[in-house]
Image (cartoon, rainbow, N blue to C red; front, side, top):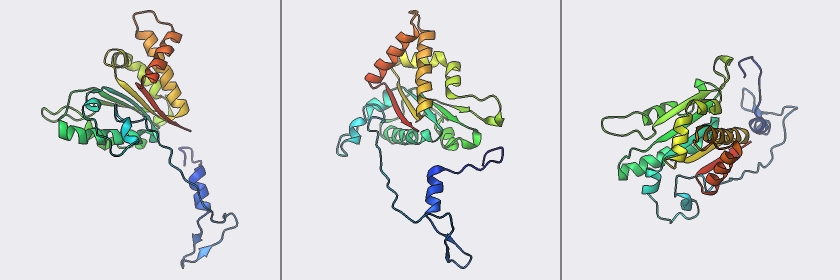
Length: 234
């Protein structure tokens, strides 16, 4: 239900609901007029073998491959998650926890921009809060989490692309000086917007008077080199 009281039914979840008989108070199935006959639902997994921590892509191809422990730990990460697009990043920080548990924690910048509708939609907020806390001499597993709420209080809609401009110097430094690997996960439209904003930041911050077209070419080079990875849906 939306804040305005409008009920919106999910396409897939509503379809599945219609294939399942409702039960009466005594447990007997009720055949509703609108109910569909149960049918086979075809499901498939669409893996993205390249959306892994740096130099870990080979693990998607062979479970017997040797785990590389130094590259993921020593690579700065710039991560952009939109809504449920946070899911693969959770596997990232869980893997980093395992690697750092055996190798020791290193002081590497890992920045996560998290876009969602409101604070109530911020998935894994408490888990991320713990990961960004520094205890004693132990470095943070994730340097910073930057939440961006698009519909908080229903006013002043703000998206990840807007927040990126507030941190353009940091993003430019990570991209061009520290060779960070960039990850985006979310809707196709959102990821395309983030990519365009990265190009705008390069154009704005570069001291070489780059045009936007030249900045876009740099983004394409980063993608070809595997420094920008995307997992898009919708």
